Every structure is written in structure tokens, then in C-alpha cells.
Image (cartoon, rainbow, N blue to C red; front, side):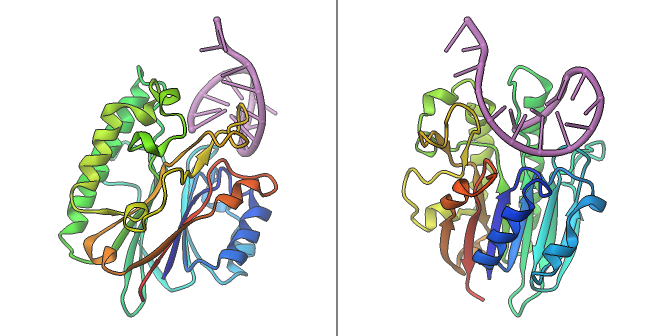
Length: 259
DNA sequence: ATGGTAGACCTTCTA
């Protein structure tokens, strides 16, 4: 089963690019982040025409996540548990139906900038809610994948110029500690078990020629439960997508699990 | 010293 994550930065602005990539990469399951539209504005027809079932958790203007699947799926939740007052659409989870099913959670973790504001507190609180939810999922002892835009630079080697990020929410010690607390519940980062080389980035800012200078960071991950890690086969980071027409500032990351 | 770009949408916010 091929499972992709991609922060598309508006699915409607990116539609031709998204369709071209789906046709070329042929993922079975795709988690989109920052679809930036309400459910009714999601471009269902052209994506369904490629053979995908679609589940969305949209929001006007900002955020918004979706799961596409060529296999049958059932939505388990829209929104992350732990705060009923949270109105931001950043999490969707589905069970992918297959002889060996996989639970897939697609997430768009808050950016958290600027760090001296409530936005950073929201980021850390969201991280803690995700950690608690992952703790609950682990008790099921099943294959699951939590993938998406984690908005965290885990280690200095995950940035071309780590010192450029010292004042940024993505590289704060608290953000990195929150990511470790999640991962060290017993999850595997596909980037690590797939032995991807240092310098495998997933995001380059639109500004200041970041792409041309390879001023990138790795912030889009697949975290795997032990049962999913046992099925892990390979990982590909689709760097070429950053050179497409009207690119997203993120590129897709794709993993293969044994069926 | 604090730019530079992109998207939604209406003027500024978010990233």
C-alpha cells in the first residue's frame, strides 16, 4: 500500500499540478494538508475520475485536510480529540479497508509563529493532544500511520541552515521536545528506517530564493506504529515536484507498506 | 536592517 502526504497549499490553486502528480505517482492513499477550502469547494470530480474516494475536513481560507483512497475507507474522525473548542480543521483519520487494513491519520500541525504569542501555546497544546491520541491508538495494536505537515524541524540536520531557524517556532526546544515525546511512544519515522540521506528536505519557502539555494527543511513525516513499521518497504521524497508549474512550497513524501 | 512570495479574499492574515 502506497501512502503519500502532501501539503498542497490550496488544492484549487494547485489542481493541474495535483492531478498530474497523482497520475504519475499512483499512490493508493493520499493525505492533503492546507486544502484551504470548505468541503463544498473541494474539486471532487476530477480527483474521483482518477479512481479515488475522497473524505474532507475543510475550512474557509485556512488549513483544511483531506484523505484520498483508491481502496474503500471509512472516516474514523474529523478533528483531533482533546479540545471541543478548537475550530481549526487540522486532522482527519480513516480506516483503509484491505486484507491487512491500515489506519491513516492526516495532520496539519499548527505553525506556531510568532513564538511570543498564543499561537505558540496552541501549537504545543495541539502536539500534546496528538501525543495523547497516539497513545490511545497504540493500545489497539494495529497498523497505523500518522502523516502530514508536522511543522517541526526535529534535528539540526533536518535544515540546510539550522541557525536561520533559531527564533522560529519550528525549531524551538519545546517544539522539538514535543515531537520527541510523540515519537518516543514507540513510533518509527519512515525517513529514518528508510535510511534517507541528510539533506532530504520537504519544504522550501517561496521567498528569498530558498529553493534555488536549497535552503530547505524536513517537516513532513510519516510516523508508523510498530505493526506498520514491520510492513515498511520504502520511502520516496518527491523533490522534483518543487520544480513543477506553480509548485506548492512543500513536496510529496510517499511510503510503501507491504500489503 | 528585516526583505523576499504565495493564497484567500477584500485588506489583512497566515505561512
